[in-house]
Image (cartoon, rainbow over all chains, first blue to last red; front, side):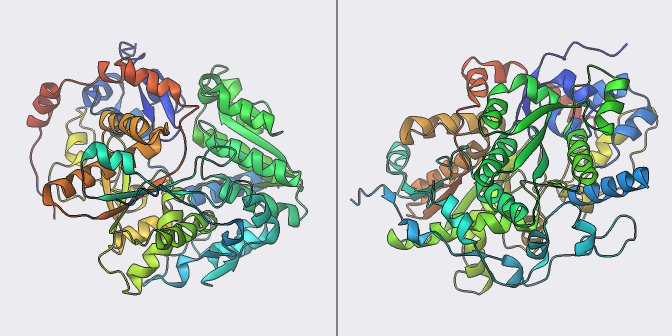
Length: 86
Length: 456
């Protein structure tokens, strides 16, 4: 069971542009944390211990998969959709 | 004392050309590689998503690109924007510095975004496109594109991240007022959305998923294209109307900036202001001009790179080492500093930073709110949280001038008002932004446990 004691804490999400509760940051990536969770939360809580205590190495590897530059992401999406159609 | 506060241009002085920095870069931008082929992308790769004129602009090295008269006509609704001299802020700070700011909050959606939204809507209309799909977080871009669509009779479909859709209704309502159709993402309108909803009906969404939905929408229909409000070269090109106007206005003020300061998210507003000035730095006319990109300290993209991945900084305490302390024998993925450092940031900005033509600075949340409130109480403008970051650095630089006695000229890029961000102000005033700050002694204790390593 994941520790939900920080869930209501809010900070501004630099990607979405408004206040976001910690619960979103730890769940938004198909129930795994946002890749930027360390960046955004390290000043507010011991995020390092939180992640170590609540996720397996495989899960950490999964959510830490680096995001791609936006244009590359879009081109990949296009390829995927074309392949699905074709 | 010169009390003149506003420097205003006539409508006829709205720029007739956008300035393309790609013509003057000392080194060209690295090409975008196609993920499938590994080769540089071609116009055909982008054609399903963007009109050909925008694709041409994306790769153009022509210095000046004509602003279509139809776009200039729409710009007349709020452009030229005003350049202000911040006399009251200067007085409050008791600084000899001269502070100017360009304010983009007077556009219909209240930010700089329509400078490109209108242009993108125009080129799509010209190509016979009927619909544009896009994604949005808090809604600034979605509302700007809805406005742009209304100007040219285009249908706009906005996939808004569901948590933002639920928590930030006012931008959504603005989109609807301009005729845009805004749906929460994940939505049942696309395969990507349906798949996610089947997996988790309560999914709060993410920007990545909203992009997937918007791209799928655009690729699936011949009458539909996709639009982006930041990052791409043509977006920054359209935003140069800001800097071109500001240059003329500074001339009217008989001034030229020593320092230009602005906030960067995707970077489009600030780059729009400073690119025409960077030209002066590149050609040697103003070699001492300083340009400072300001970003959130919590989430630096230019100053440090993502905290969790980046181990190439000279600071010595590296996130890689922090990751190694996670336990479980966890080894982080191979590094990504180069690619990741600038994820989400316009490649032009990253490139200028690498070339040493612009600087970057990171600011903490509470300090920026304090600066934003000072600005509201002196200059009257209630700023969005993004420009507050830049205001904080403007104040710091002005206070340095007070110490040194230098009367430097500072130009601030002010991207827009915060009238739909009042919840953030409320959180600040009620102390909620402080409540969750992790105790410094805990952070210090945690850092003390880490091995200190210098990496060159």
